[in-house]
View: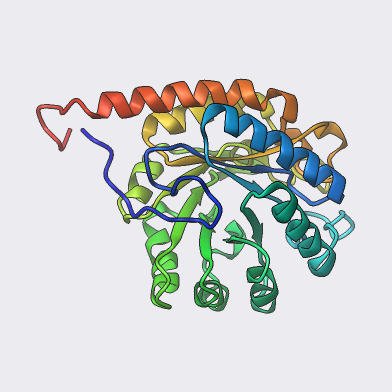
Length: 289
């Protein structure tokens, strides 16, 4: 059984397309906390990915509009956040990704970032999907925690109907019960059947929504195992939130990977990706197996 081919999505400044042979890495902090911190993380990840031959996209949020508590920090906001993203992009020569929560944010964000991300909670918001598609930017749709893989086809179609087919999907786990998520690896196969690349979000998949008393908890120790499993299942890239000191991060600290551990994790992932591609070159007796 070979990996089903998918549309290759080119991102400006990315060394290889998403959906091609190379494992793509999307990594950065949950929230933009400071310009210097963003530069530190992006610079470290660019160097790590460069050593491993991996295409790299920096990610961060300028506004976390879906925090559990209204008293939680949300980030620097649109104007300052986009200015920081533009600085990181220009100084380090890396493509950047940010999420948008409302249609009015799409135009200014699209003027700065290379990939517009539709948050998981908003993946059915038609006007937001259409606005992102019309921007002409690459669009990353995060599969809602509440959504079956089959239903993601309709979100993809909303973007594609604008004439923009530069879409990929990110799996980030499914609601399993109170304060818990589960990853169904069958979903990665089903999502790729739609013909677009699929990224696995290894850190939000171990999140425990609302489990930390007005904030989300997480189980960082499962990140590596889930990342390895997702690569074996045939995903096209990894989405990983990272921070030099996750305990001090303003959001999602419990599920973020310490920056110093990222190279070791990605070295494992590169080896598994290579093994999967090699194994898939050997046909099985039945392609339906």
